[in-house]
Image (cartoon, rainbow, N blue to C red; front, side, top):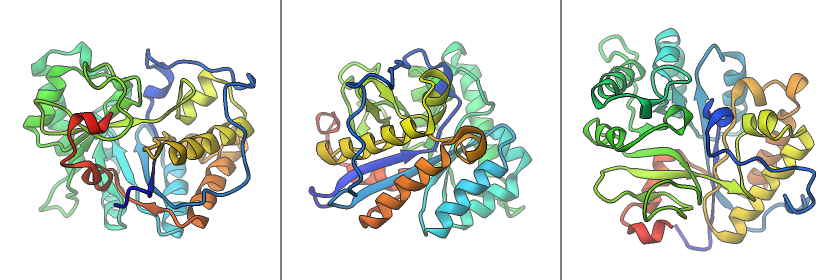
Length: 298
């Protein structure tokens, strides 16, 4: 990819956004917290990766988001729990056949891998991956190579298991806030020394990592303030020439009447499509950085 092409990852999120211990609140009313929300579209196209979590009983919200993306011919990555896949196997298969990448988001919403033994994690992740992949003879099989943990909860045991199970990336990191020695300031997908997968950071703007649930519950942002944050993320991605990861939940962003976050999401998609941005899956984004050393991913 040409170096002048800016990168933007738009991730649609996970329940970790509410309770991650490293979630840093920002006062949206502070004049220094966010850059001005300009109306101009970015002058150069971005590379965009949309990530969507499928968990709990979210059906209508997920459908609204994915239908909007399909109408715009936008590909994305959907992170699925085993519980959700067991209840909606054919739906996951349909999304895969429509062009979405399917990734693993653990077994159950709210689990914390870092509190488990190696053996417990191995059993959980092995079974969860099998559940999300589905049954090939039954016609529900989908390939799974990506992962994001619940609650950003993982450790070296998790990493060893991801290697053993053949995962190619783990998006359970926050840009510039990574608790791995030597990678603390990583802003783009990075190879982790001693492992076979890449880390994919979620973007942070002025100390706030970009998640709709965190913005609503922890930051108490209005829809207008959320839109300003998204615009700030787009501007930051362009200025720094680095990925921007935004986590969204279908049940939240898809319910405009209750939460007021749908229109800001649509406005951002409009800005990106009007600028000629290219949308890729998380796996495709990682492939853009394969071969670059750890130092280049920081």
